[in-house]
Length: 78
Image: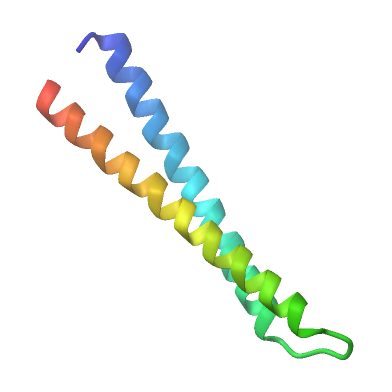
């Protein structure tokens, strides 16, 4: 790997870590919002919050998998 490719991969890893952290934070807030009771909240609202929370956790896990793959490539290429 060239130095430019290594730098690019390290930058991607840093970006994907940030994206994953933001998605996990978002999923926590959505989950808490679905569990806090308030007047007028319907079952569909709670379900939408839970589904969105789980989807964002899934996307964050996919990002962590990509990060793992890129780190492995960096270790093998160095």
